[in-house]
Image (cartoon, rainbow over all chains, first blue to last red; front, side, top):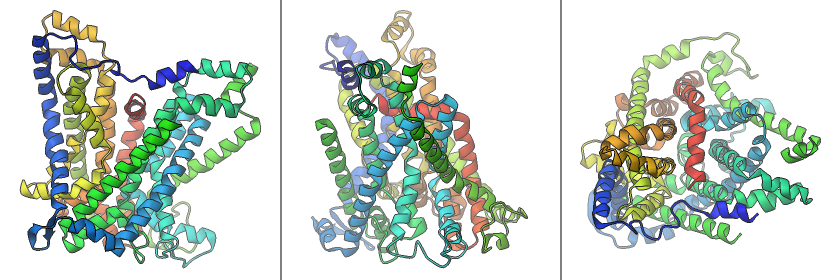
Length: 309
Length: 280
C-alpha cells in the first residue's frame, strides 16, 4: 500500500532543489546556451503563435473594437456587457450544462469500459480501444454530418426505427442540446479509455494479490488500491475533458447554429458569432478571456478535490 | 488457478453482462462510420426510402462523381499538405526542445516548463480569433501557412517529447561528450535513435489532430481553393443540406484516409497518449 502511493506521488526531477545546483559556472553557461539553442525553434513558434495571440486577446478585450475598427479604450465595458447580455447568459448556462453532464459521464463510463477490457487478451483489448477511439479519428465534421442525417425528421434512421417520422430532434429546444451532448460523448471517451487502460495495467499486481490473500473484497480492492493508484490519470482525464467540453463548438455550428431559440448556443459559439455576425472583436475577446478564466477555475477546483481525497 | 480467476475479477454473470454491453456499444460506435460508407453509395431513392436500407441494394458511384466535380481533390491535397508539414515541423522542433528541457540543466528551465504546462490548460480555440488578426497583419490569412504555423506552436509536442527524453540515461550523453561529440552530433546520433518511438507517437498524434482541427481551418481559410476536405464537406452541407449521398461521399473521403493511418499506427498512438499523461 505504502509502496503504491510512493510510486504515484514521486515526480521526475522533484528531488532537485534548483536546476543548476552543484554545477560549475562554466558548465552552467554552456548548458544554458546550448539549452536555449535547442529550444529556439520551438520557442519561436510558441511565442509567435500562442503567446502573442493570447496577448492580443487580452488587449482587445479592453478596447472598443467593432465594425469601424478600434474606436478607443473601453475599460471594463466589454466585461460588464456580459452581465446584461441575455444571449451570453443562455450560452453560459448551456456550456455549464454540457460540462456538468459530459465530464462525469465520460469519466465514469470510460473507467467502466477500461476496467472491463484491460485484462482481456491484447487483441481484444486493442480492438475495443480502437472502436471507442474511432469517432475521434473519423473527425468532428464527418461524425457530425452523418448524425445530422440520422437525426433528420423524415429520412433519418432514428425516426424510422422508432416510428417517430416527422419529429425534429435538432429543431426542438428540449431535445437539441441532449443530441449534442450525446454526440460529444461519443467523440470524447476514446482518449480517456486509452489512458485508463494504460494506468490500470500499471497498478502493481502483487499488492492486489496480497490484499486478496488478506480477504479484501473486489470493491475494497478497487477503492483502496486501484482507485488511489489511478488518481493522477483520473485527474488528467477530468481536466482534459473539461477543457474540451467547455470549447464545444463544431458540433453546434454544424448541427444547430446555436438554435432553436438559442437553446444550444455556448460561450464558444457566442464568441464565433460575435466576430462573424457583428464584427465585434472587443466583446468577443472579452468573452474569450472569461472562458479561459472559467476553465482555469474549474481545473483548479478539480485539482483541489483530487488532492483532498 | 483459483486465485488467477479471482484476480481477473468477478462472477461469470457479471462477465457475460459486461461483454454483451461492450459489444452493443462497439456496434453503436462503429455504426456512424458504416453509415457514412454505405450512404456514399446510395442513390436518392435509397436515401429517402421510408424504411432504412441497411446495405445499398443498387450501389452507385454518382455521389463520388458529383463530389469530384467540386474541387475535392484540391481540398484533399490541401489537408494532406497541412497535416504533413505540421507533423514534420512539430516533430523536429518538439524533439529538440523536449530534449533540452529533459536533459539540459539551465537557468529558467523550471519556469519554462511551468509556462508550457499552463499554456496546455488554456482553451486552444480562444486564441484562434486573435490569431486571425495576427495572420491578417502578416498577410498570411487564407493561406495554408495560417493553419500550419499555429499547430506547430502548440506546446503539447514539447511536453510529450520531454517525457520521452527523460528516459535517456545521462551516462550515455556524458560518454558521448567525453568522446568529443558536439551537441548537434550527440542529438542526432545518440538522442534521436533513443526517442524514435516518442517521435512516432507525436507524428501520428499531430497528423490526426491537425486533420481534424475544424475550427482553425474554418477561421483561417476562406476561399474555396484553399479549403480543406473537412471544411469543404461542412460548406457543402451548409449549401445542400438534403443531398446526403454527396455529403456522405465527402465525409467518407475525409474520414477513410485518417482512419487507415490510425489503424496502421495505432500502437504508437496509444503508447504516445498514455506516455504524455501517466508520467506527467
